[in-house]
Length: 294
Ligand SMILES: Cc1cc2nc3c(=O)[nH]c(=O)nc-3n(C[C@H](O)[C@H](O)[C@H](O)COP(=O)(O)OP(=O)(O)OC[C@H]3O[C@@H](n4cnc5c(N)ncnc54)[C@H](O)[C@@H]3O)c2cc1C
Image (tube, rainbow, N blue to C red; front, top):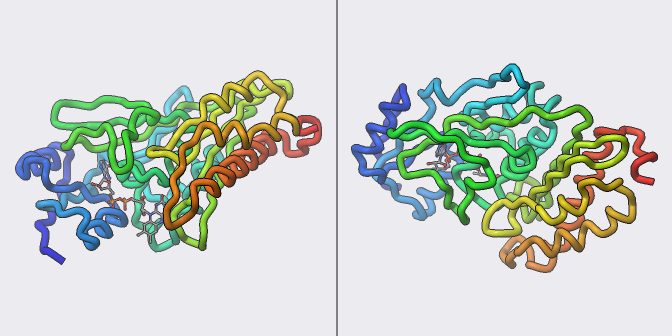
C-alpha cells in the first residue's frame, strides 16, 4: 500500500487549512472502516489522510429544551447501539447499529462516516430519514443545515463540498405515541444489506397521524417512500391496509441485480420488510396490538 501523510488536527479550522493545502485532494478519515478498505482496493488514492479524531467539535450528545437531540458526527456506531439515549428514545437507530457489521467495526466506525460514505445500503440512513434528521455541514465559509433527504446525491455522492465536514446530526423531538422500527435483510451474518427499511408511526386514537418510511440498497440513494407514507397517513393500520403495503413499496423502488440479490428478489423482500417494520412500530405504541391490527 502507498504511504500517506497522516494529519491529526485539533480544530475544524486546522482541518480545513490542511485540506486547502492539499487542494481538496486529501481525504478526511473518521473510523477508517470504509476509506481504508477503498484505499487498499485501489478505488481511492488521496494525497493525504486528515483524521477527524482530535476534533472535540464533532463529539457529544445534547438534548435541547424542545427535546431535539443533537449528536456529534464522530459518535461511534457502538454508542448508538448501547447508550440509553438511543436505545430508549430512538430504537430504530439502535436496531440499525446492532445490525451493522460486527463489534470490532462498530467500536471504531462513526455515524458521520456511515452517512458521508453515501453507500445506498448504509444502515444508519433509513432510520435517520424516517426521523427527518438534518445534518450540519461546516466548511471554511461557515456552516449550513441540510435535511438528510437532500444529502445523498447518488452512490458515493453527497451534497458536501470538498472541504466540508459533517459536524452534527440533529433529530427533531418526537410526539407521544410514536413507534419506530428498523429491519435489514442480508445473505449471511455481518454482510451489508441487500435491503433495509425503517418505519416511524405517530398514532392518535388508533389512526396513523404521521407515517415515515425509508429504505436502503434498492435505489441509487437511501430513499423515503412518500407515496406509501401518504396512503397510510390518516388511516387505521389494519390487515387490509398492511396487505397492500408490499405492492405500494415495490412500485416506489428501483433495485438492481448484483452479487447480493436479484432485482426481483430485492423488490419482493423490501415490500415484506417494510410491512414488518410498520407492524413492529405499531406494536411499540400498542403492545397488545389487537385493537389496531384487527
Ligand atoms: C467488515 C465491514 C463490514 C461492514 N458492514 C457494514 C454494514 O453492515 N452496514 C453499513 O452500513 N456499513 C458497513 N460497513 C461500512 C462502514 O463500517 C460504515 O459505513 C461506517 O459507519 C463508516 O464509518 P467510518 O467512521 O469508519 O468512516 P470512514 O471510513 O472514516 O470514512 C468514510 C467516508 O466518509 C468521509 N467522512 C467520514 N466522516 C466524515 C465527516 N464527519 N464529514 C465528512 N466526511 C466524512 C471520509 O472522507 C470517507 O470518504 C462495513 C465495513 C467493514 C470493513
